Amino acid sequence: MPTNSATAAPAARDYRVIALILACAIFMEQLDATVLATALPAMARDFGVHAPDMSIVMTVYLLMLAALIPASGAIADRYGLRRVFAASIVLFTAASVICSLANNLPQMVAARVLQGLGGAMMTPLARLILLRAVDRHHLVSAMAWTLVPAFMGPLLGPPVGGLIVSHLDWRWIFYINVPIGIVGFVLVRRYIPYIASESAPAPFDLRGFVLCAVSLGCLLFGLEGIGGSGGSGELMRAAALLLVGLLAGLAYLWHARHRDNPLLDLSLLRIETFRLSVIGGSLMRITQGAQPFLLPLMFQLGFGYPADKAGRLVMATACGALVMRILTPRLLRRFGFRRCLIVNGVLASLGYAVCAFFRPGWPPALMFALLVCCGAFMSLQFAAYNTIAYDDIPASRTSAASSLYTTLQQLMLSFGVCSGALTLKLAMAGQHHEHPQLIDFSIAFIAVTLISLSSTRSHLRFSPQAGASMSGQRR
Image 1 (tube, helix red, strand yellow):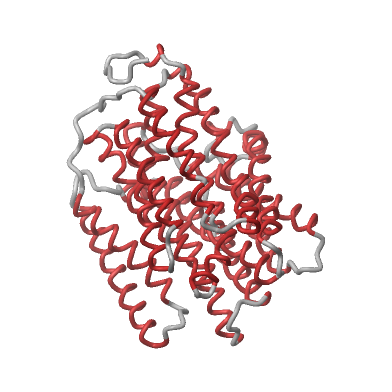
Image 2 (cartoon, rainbow, N blue to C red; image 1 turned 30 degrees about the vertical axis):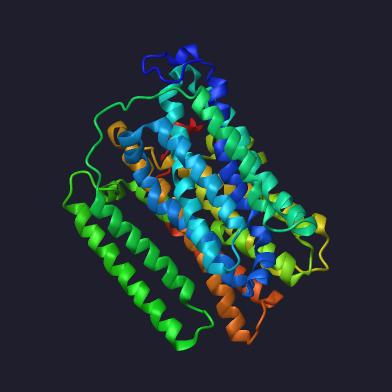
């Protein structure tokens, strides 16, 4: 099958093959993101640091995604979509090997930065390839083929990570990516067609990119520094980073208002449904980002569970999300977006508040069932956000809206991990605990729950008719 012909008709290719190849890349990224959380305590022991300090390993990766996703389309238009996608797989796989060789926390952070460079390109470019290489009448089916392996990553990640940590060595969690990456690269070069850019690339907003990267990086590392064990000197450095991050963010706001094609088009926030979805979704994603960091640590450090048992319990949230995918269209059609966001948002927040009361004496089956409910509620909430956000977006601005929304998604997940780690450290300091105790985890869960509950105000401001044409809501 030729791969270098710009004129090859997409209809001549099997769209299922293309969809599954792209899904493999998404699967690798999703698996890596979820398999890591269970291994954090073991990594902390080998690196000689406290387990809460390992949050930077997760947040720095999410930060790279947030910073680079807006630039992925421009890079692909300039250097070729298939070429950049294949290169991202190579970089992600190579960085996985480097992660496995890390001997201390700074080396691991540097390796995760490289992983983020590759990961930031894979998922958005996979969607773009699908849109450009598959005929529209096959697009819905092709999307379905990509979703199945993408769902399997979060489902398999926690138990696989737990088994590896319990019976092998945590370094093996990164070796999983090597065979997947090699096969994915070969298949991309073999079966993904050359895809010409649909138009001349727009001038890249380099100044905006630098300002965004500086702002996000300084804010993240500043938050990570608060509550550290370095004393007043570390606190001063954290405050300085936060100040620089705030100033860079304000500079970007000024820059975006005076440029025709900014990296992130913040004028989209004037559209009410988009703005409310961004605000409510951002607050909820802080809790969602903290959960995969706090739960494995609590089960291993607070309960004394082995990593494999902790991984099996954490898997429950992915099971709940998978089941809810089937019910989501019916619920939105029956109750409408506004009512679902209000009621389900409270349930989703309180679900994670229940985690604050988990104790070793609870039956594992009961905790698993409650976590299934947590995953289901959060899945419905984010499906509603991700849909209604585009209700009033003009077709000509869909791409810009998607770029801004995806960036904010990743950013708030990283701040969620950061918030979970920060509240855990502050709780430990307040209780004078050198190592995290169950009460510290309880305080952290309650704190992030209060953040997501504050999103209810945004949900109440949605119009009762918001999204009715998208859901087919019954009158």
